Image (cartoon, rainbow, N blue to C red; front, side, top):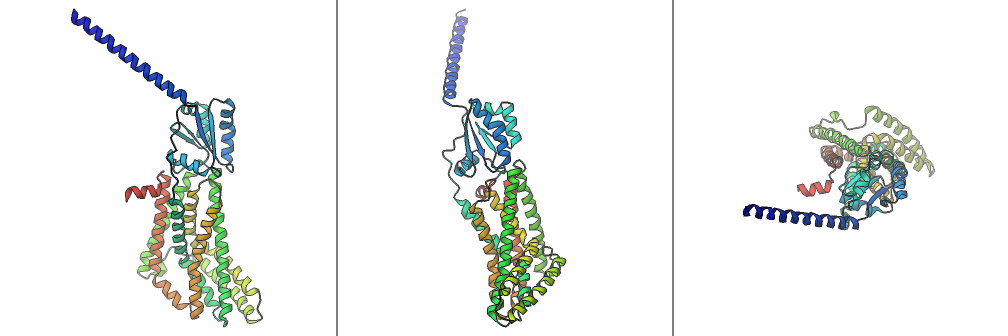
Length: 405
């Protein structure tokens, strides 16, 4: 009997202890919850059409209701804050705006954000504290890594057989010009024309990529997959070219200008070089600059089918470093560096051909190292393919390589 009384007492004491414990825990939780003001962070881009729709349908009504505090960061003006939330929440491979952070979750794309707002999910997560971004540090490697990739890509593209072949063909056609100074002027005017059209092409592609991100934010992640597939195909084709050039089977090269374009370029060059020769025989005339420059522009447009492959991959890399934020001065600087690197091999080859008045030695030199050029190009395409596929999967390339190696 006494044993039963003692057990009831022990049970009552234990239940009383649990009641006090849970009451204390709830009061502490309530106290912590009372200290937190419901808050969300909205990442905006003033150039983004979709972002403006999200502001009208979600952000402005929340602000008017006054139940939730809204912090707004602009991708262009508040870059460091945007990246802090981006990295802290592990947002990878998505469009940088519009994005809403609430509690421990983030919502991107107009449809997802609107749906979360309408069904109350956004308000529910806003009741909990945001992740702490105070320990985030800027990634100092971005500029130098991007610059290194751009320099290497530009130099590899510059020794592209397509670009070199067109330059040597041009120099050989105007090689009968006796005055070396005139020959140098027309050669560098030609290279300048190639540079201008290539630089314009690069800016156009970069602007197009940014426009796609702005207008199709939800589908922007698929750009990474598209670039990954493209670079993988180019890697396989260029690797095949490496093996056939190593066997000196140059007729089997796949990644080169189509024969139709090669013949067309040759006819265009013959027409223009005849005009250059006539201009150089008379008194000094602006035509010895205008004609080769125009020829460089035309040839640059047609050979972009071959030389533009690396450029597109590199531009995709540049765009991935600043997704959705508009083409900024730093990206224009990257494009300028890439194009300068692209013409440096052409300038060197032109100087050698002019000095020795022969393109045969330079042509043989390039042909003997064709397999090496193809191998370096294939490795570069492989690097870009891995980078874009990892970005599509939501993994940052440099963090991945750090963990692996």
